[in-house]
Length: 297
Ligand SMILES: C[S@@+](CC[C@H](N)C(=O)[O-])C[C@H]1O[C@@H](n2cnc3c(N)ncnc32)[C@H](O)[C@@H]1O
View 1 (spheres, protein in one colour):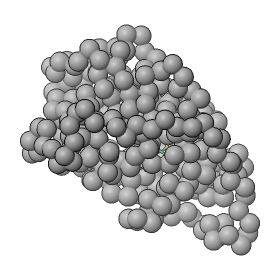
View 2 (view 1 turned 30 degrees about the vertical axis):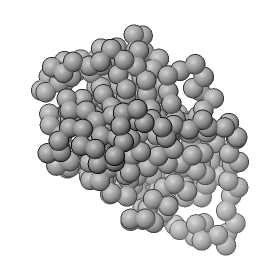
View 3 (view 1 turned 45 degrees about the horizontal axis):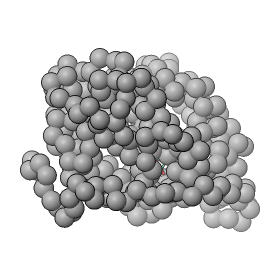
């Protein structure tokens, strides 16, 4: 196990958030429909790439759909995504949370500072960050990092007067010192990482011992009936609506493909544990369309 405070990055806490950017609100232009001849337009399955190509693919997708991301999110999930994010924030187990923290190795055993610093990685347009900071009694700060700058810029209008600081940063190389955070969360981001284990190790590195990681991610429902309907929606309805509304030919085909290749909840639990976490627990939400994992550093 890594020793707490290992100065691998050679940074002190004074410079913990020196990478915070003052984002200019320059509106990202919506990407037009690709012409038929565009190589992306002929990628029928939008199969998730691997390694560096995956990073490029993911950053490109989210940079291009940023202007329509919020709308599509709520339409395609019939607004259920809001409930999922609420539940995920509950599971952080902060004093301001409305939910009960998990019992085994739970946050109730670990004193949380009055002004906790929380990381929202792969933050996109900040919906998860906002779910936390709008809670009555929350007195901390959220650092919201993402490597697709247009997503951060697009969401910036929602941040006025909130203690959320956007940072352009890659979850595989988080620009923060060791043990910099009192909690971390990630919603619908983990499945996009080019290297899942490296990403999980980065979370372990930046979390102080005893603090909590919460992961909200799509999964495949265990019930065959629900699974059938889910597959039909995810593979036939969602890509069509996504294509029409976003104007992107395959971003919403990539989504179900990326869920398909992501480990199931038990597999993810094992990977989280292998990255240096304890007390890993998970629960399905909405009949297993998504799952929330929690773990203690
Ligand atoms: C589906 S969106 C989720 C956004 C937000 N968390 C939410 O709940 O709506 C996934 C986000 O993860 C970001 N992302 C994917 N891989 C990343 C990486 N390696 N580093 C940083 N951000 C990443 C994308 O740019 C995108 O904004």
